[in-house]
Image 1 (tube, rainbow, N blue to C red):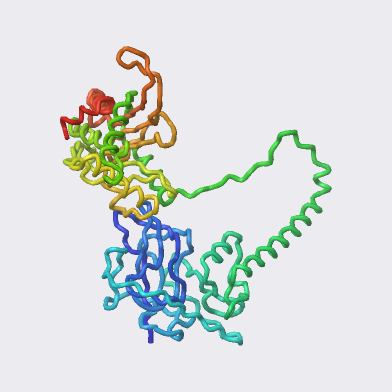
Image 2: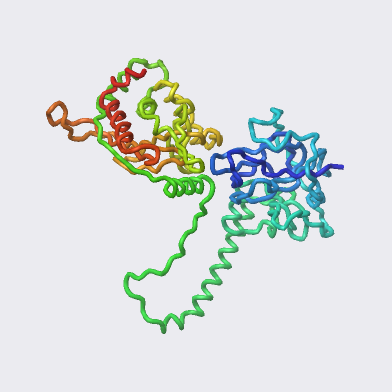
Length: 471
């Protein structure tokens, strides 16, 4: 007889206490192997796939896509030792979920930290529907009142068992239009609910809603006729949209609020002539030839300038220990850079940037940026920064007031580089000008230090040869 084990949302590290279900990778009735990814979740740090430490048949899932679960909450139950349809019968869904006691599992681990066993190909065990109404089955056992109800399991047209839906698209379409799949009779094989079934239910619901709305308008016509005429241009009150602050957006909100609350920041800025920097970059990339490797980006050059400036002004590569009332100067530069993605603003970190040249920094920035765009950054790649570089010029703006990435002590903002009138060698000329903004924690240094740092960065931008002393 199969043993039903419960798999809980594991500790995702970095102090994270909750995660949002983005996409289920398995359905009830699927056969899973040890360490096979079963769900994709989004935390405040990154999007990760969570592997199941047990092999067997999925008998229940807990939580809808888009819902948020705390660490330690049940994710799914697996019938270990079930290899055929009888092992995944609806009765198993109602079995008490047992806590794992060791043995066949690999432990609650994330992808990349498991046993390394190859994931088995997904195999579906289709539930058998009885032709005659079955006796009511016991509902899934709930060990605590706060446990979320399993999805895709329930009574379907008087029959207990998994809802016969395979396509995540069909489930999503039903959720968007508030269609209860448990009330539909599927037109596919073995009662499988197809998109056409959901579309038909949506049309029926729309027609019923239209009839109800028409009846309401008819009943309200006498009242409307007696009411005073609305003024021209008056608009009916609209319902405000509420967007939950969670995931990446919530983490950003918390960090920015903490920065503004705890850090007494100040900002200084300067315009710099970047013409020589752009010429030096063009020469470097031309020297590499058509197949001489990746091109050096402006961001990589600015990052290298920052590491040189931090070597001269280590006060800005520090943090404040408020409990001990101490300034902690950090031994190495872990350079964060702001990257805008579809999931929101993230700050990947280039480790040991002080040991890298511009080409190495550029290659690492490119690698981390690609991971950010695909949502594959790990929490470790998004934490531990000591100084942040923010190139908001990519948005077409000249300047901004950076908000320090708490608990760091400073952030350098870079605007767009564009042609502007500039006095060059005593004459008016058109030069490539950029605005640089430095926001710093006034507890770690005074304006003289911050101004010295910013002036050194500007000097390197205007005369890249200044960097030769530190290369």
